[in-house]
Amino acid sequence: MLANEAVHKLKTEKGEKKEKEKIKAKAISESESDMETPLLLLDTVDGAVDHKGQPVLRSKSGGWRSAGFIICVEVAERFAYYGISSNLITYLTGPLGQSTATAAQNVNTWSGTASLLPLLGAFVADSFLGRYRTIVIASLIYIMGLGLLTLLSMLPSLNSSNCQDTSKFLSCSPPQPQVILFFCSLYLVALGQGGHKPCVQAFGADQFDGQNSEECKAKSSFFNWWYFSLCAGCLVTLWILNYIQENLSWGLGFGLPCIAMIVALVIFLLGTKTYRYSIKEDEKSPFLRIGRVFVAVVWNWRTTPSAIAIEEEARGTLPHQSSEEFKFLNKALLAPDGSKEDGVVCSISEVEEAKAVLRLVPIWVTSLVYAVVFAQSSTFFTKQGATMDRTVVPGLDISAASLQSFISLSIVVFIPIYDRIFVPIARSCSRIPSGITMLQRIGIGMLLSAASMVIAALVEIIRLKTAQEYGLVDLPNVTIPMSIWWLVPQYVLFGIADVFTMVGLQEFFYDQVPNELRSVGLGLYLSIFGVGSFLSSFLISAIEKATDVDGQDGWFANNLNRAHLDYFYWLLAGLSIINLAAYLYFAKSYIYNRKCTI
Image 1: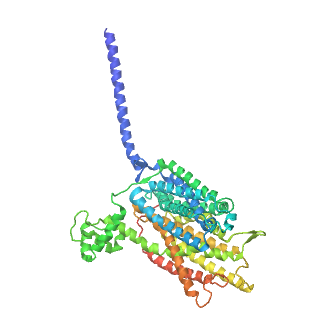
Image 2 (image 1 turned 135 degrees about the vertical axis):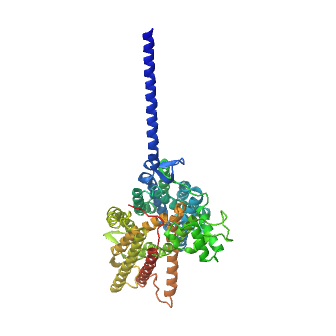
């Protein structure tokens, strides 16, 4: 019996010992878990959450994996947009039976509207819906517009035999309701593009954390490869889709972009769980916050500098060197009646946001001349080419408009060189992750665009002399014995200029606006080219009225052999140089809101 008790006691002691070991092991495990938790927290991305609103881990979200989904969407969208815009005038003057003048007016109106609608889409995204929801809704609107265009283009049109019977038909144009529906669908596409364009690129850049040195480098590279993909989509459109539309079927030509947008939307949705979503930092709309600052400044316009200095001292030194810029905005720190009630005065951060937006204005204005030059590549460059020898091989002529593909082709070729060769070399010298600053990049492109205008002017002088030497001045329909390949250098140089300025502007207007206004920032970038297009039209109209007087041939005479496009190109080159000087003045004094570091 004593033996049994001893055995029982021994088993009990062993059980207690095992239990203590289990408790000790559990305690060690919990301790190690507590030590690991901060490491996990360090791996989260500040200012971003996942699709469930939870803190997002850097290793499981964002980066090139997520950006790849978004870039696919942009390629499809550009394929769809240029599939409509590049050949729209042909459809209007063909199946829709419009005159050339009416069709050109409709194309310009639609293009101008499509260039300015991104401002509306960006406002809706940054104030209400967020970028992700805006992209999805805009894609659905886009698909609706493209689908309706496809259906309308497949409707039976009036055949030639009926058109010849004037007793039955007044014209060969389709019924008016069909025309109205066509333009409704066309503007649905513009509306979808307006919501899609600024948000997709901003959302793609959001997948890289600017506070992380490696991801900051990747973000700068993202803008390069974004534009590379965009231009690749344009090349496919110019080489394949336009051929299908003109030679096979308009229904197929409009239907393929619709299918591409449907596939792109599915791909975009597949990446939902991998995306990083920006956190809205303030319940107030960023527009309201910035608007309050300017309203407060107006109310306090009589405030003396000494009163502002006292208030600044009372609040402490303003946190940014940029506070020395636009000091008049510091008046918003005071209440109109001298009180300091909450909600009456503006905070320092709100004043700094307003200054950040105001600093963009000089850069935006001095980029307009570049946009005016940009508009010439699809107009007068093409008109030049139409008068020249376009023979590739005997029996095969190239269209003058197809030379525009050299811009996209040069971009596709040069961007890898820029990103993989130029940037690393420049980075080793400057210690800047992107190699050169955004404003330096924009300025280099502006210089190259001025050079392209000089080359265009010189080529035009040679073209005019060739026409004179062969006695073709008064024979505008006769081909000038000068190869169209003379125009290639100006197209290629213009494409390289785009790599610097276009991509630089995209990155600049995304990066330098407040976080919650990044879609609006890209909308501002897009508006540069919309306004630039209108300015180009105004400049051409003014010059035509000034030079086409007393029966003399103006700079833009219908007979290009008697016109003076060379004068116009010299004018644009001069304006570009003057504009570049103004740009450098403002760029030199610009203070960046945030910088990447190696």
